[in-house]
Length: 96
Image (tube, rainbow, N blue to C red):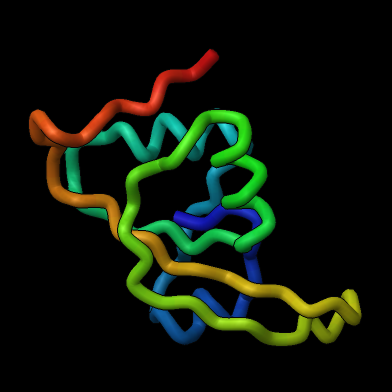
């Protein structure tokens, strides 16, 4: 899944189409699913979501800063791992 980042080259390098999440609330719902997954997200979008909803509780497994040539802006993206299921110590993120 992706949010705040959707370059065709990502699909090329992964070798398949990656589905985008439509909005911040969709990200929170995705976080609460009880199956493993990876989210590719723009760092600024992650910061915005965590300010509104609190820490998402995902583990960062990779990050890369680069230049978005078409927009002429520096962009940092992170790959976040969602564990396979919630345990007692993990907290569910609630939507307001």
